[in-house]
Length: 401
Image (cartoon, helix red, strand yellow):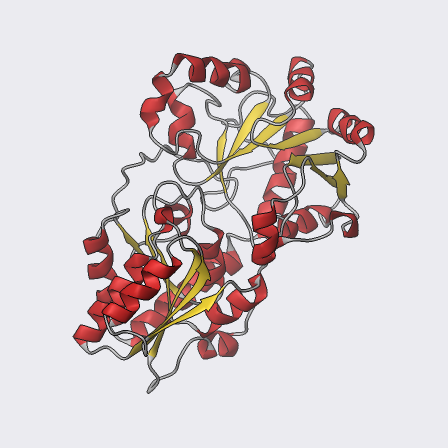
C-alpha cells in the first residue's frame, strides 16, 4: 500500500511520524515537499536538507514525479487542502484523501458568515462530504470549526504533531527536574510575541518571589517583546531569578525541559497546536497550559497530568500556576510522571503511524469508503489518542476545577 503525504516542508516535528510510517509493515511511504522552509524557521534551528531523507520528494525540483506519486497513491494525505486538481481527480474516482488540518476559524467562528469564504470552503471541503475524504484534526477545536460548515460528517479524528520521543527508565524519569533542597526550575520557551503571552511568565515570577517560593525561571527564545520583557524583569527586580537564554536549537531546548519541573505554555487561540507541550510532557514536566491552544484539551487532563487555565485570563493562570509551584514537589513530580506516560504510551509517532496505517488499509480496501461509524476488522476506533473520534469542543472551553 502506497501512502503519500504532501505538505509545505519537512521539519523536525514531522520526521518522527514520517519515519514511523516508513516502518509500518506493507506500507510504502513518501513525503512531498511543496515549498522551501522560511528563513525565520531556519534561524530557529529547524533547517535540514530534504535530500538527506530518502522518503522525501521535493516537488519544485521534480514536479512530474511528485504529481505522479500523488495521483497513484492508494491513500493521499494532504497538509490543508492539498493540490486541488489532484485531490478533485482522486475523489471523483472514489480514491481516498485524508486532510491534516489546524483550525480554519482561528480568529473567530463568526468568519463562517463571509460569503466569499464560504464559497472557498465549499470548493475545498463541503462538496466532498459524501466522498472518501477524511479529516485529521490537529487541535481540539478543529472539529468544531468544520462541523459549522457541515464538512466531514462522522469522518473527523483526533490528531496532532509528534515531536521526537525520548524514552526514560523509571529511575531516569525520577531524576529529571530538580531535587529536594534545590530551587524549583520553571521554563518558558517560544517566540516572544503577543499571541504567546511571555509576559505571563515574568508576572508569575513576581508572584512567586512575593510568596517566598524558591525558584528560577528560564526564558528561552526571542522576538518583538524581548526588550519589553527584559525591562519588566529589571523593574520588578527579578534579575537574579529570571535568565534569558536566547534562541536555542531543538536539542538544547529539550535539555532545559529535562532540567525543569514546570513548563509554562501561555499561548492564546492563535496557537493551532503547540508542539512544545508534547516535548515538555515527554520530558517529565508538569505543564501549565492555556485552554485555547489546540494541544491542551487533547493532551492534558486538568489536575492529573498537567494544569489548564482559562485562555488569556492571566489571573486564572497566576492562581493555578502559583498553587502548583507552592503545592510541593511530590505533586509536581507525580504530575510530570503522568505527563511523560501520556506521550510515551499514547500521543507519539509510533502509535499515530500504526493507527493511521490500519485506517488507510481499511479505506483503501473499500471497507470504509464513506464513513467509519461501522467499524471493521481492519480498523477499530480507539477510545482515546490519535485516530480516536474528534468530538466537537467549543472554542470557549473552560477547564474544570
